[in-house]
Length: 142
Image 1 (cartoon, one colour):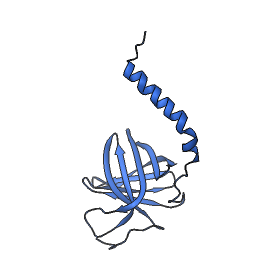
Image 2: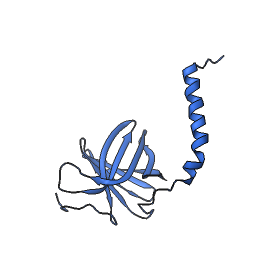
Image 3: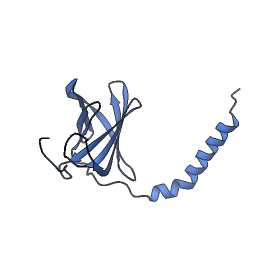
């Protein structure tokens, strides 16, 4: 016999209730369209250094230890305030969000148009992103 704690049962009920109440609101919310499906997204981060690009459904993730990077398939999701990309890097869960907002890599005079949040098997990293249509400003060679 499975026993459900009262606090867990209350949490599940609250989650189901909010899902029912917010369903219409969520369906009516506009989807992020700030990056076209045909745009190449480039991203970079520091501490540790990492970066890459997304072309269509293919993402290449690189580090100083693997300069050529590893390429894998991602699913793209346009949320209310940004773009989500999910896949598997080797055996690790890979989730990345790209949201509009000025971003600095902290090491150059560049200003990027997107903030990138990356999670690899739960390890979260912060970085910046850009596209050809929405480039960074600042020196081409920092």
